[in-house]
Length: 260
Ligand SMILES: NC(=O)c1ccc[n+]([C@@H]2O[C@H](COP(=O)([O-])OP(=O)(O)OC[C@H]3O[C@@H](n4cnc5c(N)ncnc54)[C@H](O)[C@@H]3O)[C@@H](O)[C@H]2O)c1
Image 1 (cartoon, helix red, strand yellow):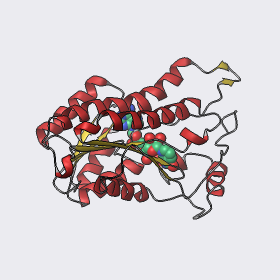
Image 2: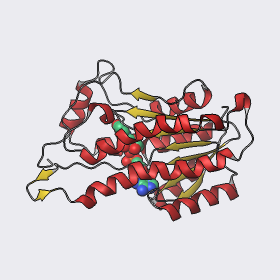
Image 3: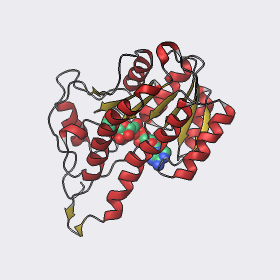
Image 4: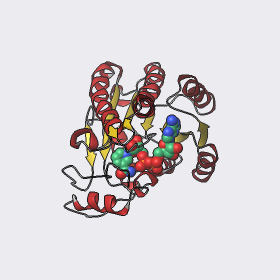
C-alpha cells in the first residue's frame, strides 16, 4: 500500500517506536492519528509532526471506540494501524512477599494483549467497509511483539506471555482477514533505545547488546519505523512476526529477582 494520503493510527505514539513510526508515516504523506495515554506528550508530538493527537487507553473499550470515532470524523477511516502501546513488568512469580498478585499479571495482559486486540477489532471493522485498493488490499495492521515471545525471559512472565499471544494472534488474524484484503503482521524487536529499554539497569542493556552478533549496540527507534514503511509497501508480507534485533539470540537476564 502506498502510504501517501492514507489515514494511519499509531498507538503508544507519545514515545519510542510509536513516536518514530508516527513521524515516519507523516513524513511519507499519511494522515496520522497518534494514540497514547500521556495527553501532554502526545499533544506535543502530534504538533511537531503534523498529526492528530488522541488521548486513548487501548485497554479500555469505550476510550478506544471514542478515539476511533474522532479519527473517522477528522481524518477519515484508517487503512493502516500500528500497535506500539505496551508496558513492561519485572517481577518474579514468587518473590519475597509471596506469589505475584494476579491483578499485576492481568494489567500487563490488558494493555499489551487485549489493547492490541481492541484496536484491531475496531480498525478491521472499518477497513472491511472500505473499497479495495490495488490487488484487492483494504488495510494493513502491524503489531509489536518481542523476541521475548520466542526466547522467553525470567521475571517477565506477564510481559512474555502477552507478547507470545500477540505473535499467535497475528497469524490467526492474517488468515481470518485474508479474504477482506487486510494484512496482519508483527515486528519482534529487541534492544531498541527507547525509554522502556533505557529504564533497565546498564548491566541489563549490556547483556542484551552482548547477544547481538552485529551491530553490538542498542538501535535507534527509527529502525522500527523503517520496517513499518516497508511492510506497508510490500504486499507479499503477511502473517509473519519479523525479528528486528541485530541477530540477538538466546535468553538474557533482564533483572535479578530482587528487582535490582
Ligand atoms: N524497546 C525495545 O527494545 C522493545 C523490545 C521488544 C518489544 N518492545 C515493544 O515495543 C512497543 C513500544 O515500546 P517502546 O520501547 O517504544 O516503549 P515506550 O515506553 O517508549 O513507549 C510505549 C508507549 O505506550 C504508551 N502506553 C502505555 N500504556 C498505554 C495504554 N494503555 N494506552 C495507550 N498507550 C499506552 C506509553 O505511554 C508510551 O508512550 C511495546 O509494545 C514494547 O513492549 C520494545
